Image (cartoon, rainbow, N blue to C red; front, top):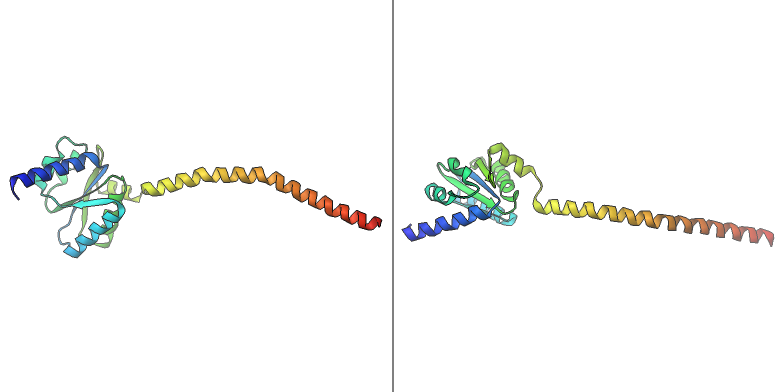
Length: 177
């Protein structure tokens, strides 16, 4: 890799580190090409990205960013998983590591907060941003539905009462005749 390509990679990584909300660092030694492709496709489906970069270049790119706390983790064959959704990269990495023991999660960072392995696993157990949005919409819609039911209930009860009186009125006119 020539000097210009390295400088371009460092600036790209620096942009990634400043714009993403979570970065997960993992060792990938022993993963096959097929395994890496599977991991990349799962990350892409979740809205996350996997990047393998030289640790020295990644360390340079980390300088001055919020996620600079991951620098000590960059030793050996490491990969970086990152996403703008705070949960997506961690969730896919943890799920993939459960299925494939050759992917070893070392830790990560969420903004200025450094995460150890347990922190990444805890982050992965949280619902994703889309799931949270769906829950909020459900919570907002539920009271509206209940209000509509409560408002319509007295009218329905009145209709049943009037219907019952109408039937008894018909019964009384039949008896009188």
